[in-house]
Amino acid sequence: MTTVTIDPQLKAKCPRVALGCLTADVEARETSPALEEELRICEEKILKLPEPRAVLESSTILATRSGYKALGKDPARYRGSAEALIRRILAGKGLPRIHAVVDIINIVSVESRLPIGLYDLAHVRGDITFRAGRAAETYKGIGKYDLNLESCHFFADELGPHGSATSDSERTMVTPATERVLAIFVSFGGPENLERFGERMKSLISIHAAGSNIQFTIV
Image (cartoon, rainbow, N blue to C red; front, side):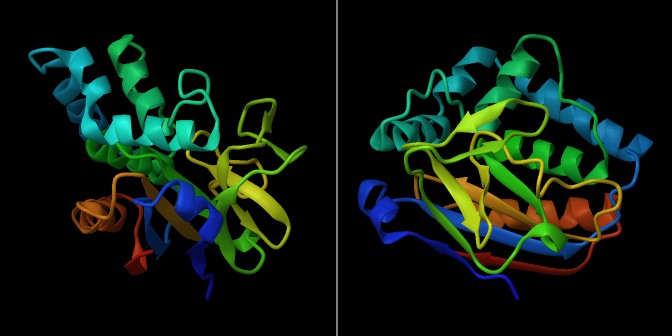
């Protein structure tokens, strides 16, 4: 069983940081009409707010930005994935449609305002540590160039870095062949609401991705 821990040096710089870790057996099937409706509702909830852009100043997103600043990263250049998804919605681009598992993670990320990493456990080696990047550490982001991880917070297993609150790596990305996943909420503002959104994710995965053997823990 993969164990997730927070590096003490990162915890010293971001004392409120907490992680919500969900593991599940899944089927990364095509997005169903019912899940498509969930995506549409998620988008509309943002766009129908009295002041939609005000969500970018929510306490949860501000806490994520502060977490980046604490390690020396500019949050305007290295945005948390939840903020990036919300900005897509505000720009009229909507949420991407990938497959059921990724789409579910994106919905819960927008609803919680929290970045969520998603990993295929078949490609994770050993335990995972959430830590700060060192000089010259990089990985190839999904559909992106190599990310400069120095002074960035990220998840690393025995083979090295593989995911962050900004973008995950190609090495551990979830594909239609994936059978078991690990999803990690990153909250720089403390553990409040992690359990609630973990339950929300459990429900969506069970209904739309044939989820089973689901476990959720807070670190």
